[in-house]
Image 1 (cartoon, rainbow, N blue to C red):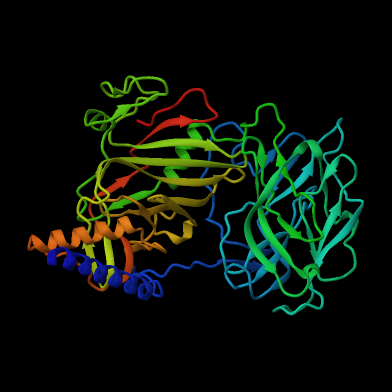
Image 2 (tube, rainbow, N blue to C red; image 1 turned 180 degrees about the vertical axis):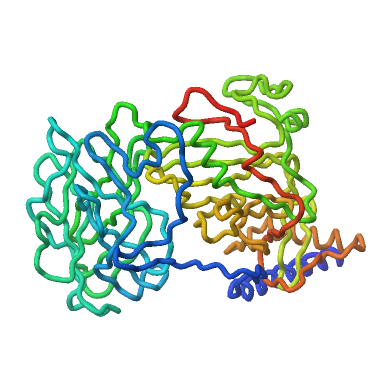
Length: 516
């Protein structure tokens, strides 16, 4: 009985320590010993042409036919082009999701014949991977794809409101003629309506539905007529939708939609990269992946994985072992390579690279200055992590890199990486768990609340290791925090994905090409 009471008392003490450490550590930031300071802000350059936001240098030279990386894309009588230069129209220097305010921009230095579709809004000092489009009507014998609005409606103004602004801002909604739709707002610093030829509305069949996506700024003081929220938008349907890059204003007075563009050409994938252009893309942008110096579990060949417990499960069929090198699977790939999938979002292409591992051990758990080896907790056979490259179809330039990190991940801009040969991101695969990071340090995955089952498991590990005489603590060192911990570091174990990959799926191609 005394032993049971002692165990319960010990568990309560353990829970109390966890709660205290969680409160203390959640107010601190993970220590980053990476020697290179990386800039996480706009990196914008301003010259006589306008403001140029962070771009990733020149695109590689893409040989071959087709319309990929040609600068513009024909959606079907409507030629769209990525705008690179902007001029600031109006800004607020406070509030918003980051507390830094918001700025609104207008494309500048438009090529001849191109028209404005709306204005662009972004959170101050926060990088965005959005592509902002301008458009040109190239129809000859059909109904024009673009027309000027017939009027404007004032959606919201900052006039008379208390906020960190140097001048008042006015948000206008262009009123389209019949058969056309508005795809963007216009921002001014005057109460006078903008000129009707300032912006163009788009023929309705060239538009598609959107929904609110990322909140970029809002005002919630005073009566309801002053309340407003600004969002980016994203298409509801992925198949043929093309985002414009404009922002959506929502308040009590606005019930309008703000559609995106739509590809109406019979073959919608004509601006996607060819096999040879994919090879060029991989040579220029394929990641260079470092494994931890203490790593024991490396990417396995498909055949090894098939022979060590993998089963094929199909709906309505009895599970069966994978035969040979995967003869009964949809695709048969070479061993020990990264597996490459090409998918489309019409205006962008995504290149996903996945690595299969044979056995994955769990993370360590950081408790203040100490780290607990979790033993077999979380151990599982077979794990797939991936890196996704987002390359725009207009110029063929790398826009962002997605790093998978357990059940989630994050988009990282190219300039936040070390770069091999000036363009290839260096990625760090964490010890045992193989989640991906852009810098060689340690990372904490803090939970806002630990489940009771997690606490019991941690308590069990603590007592089991303590009773065995083995220290429960492993190298906590200079690290301090609370949560599951990933360690990433440089070593001689490296995977050059440009030299080791198989192209196993291209959504818009019937045949699949394998890199030798």
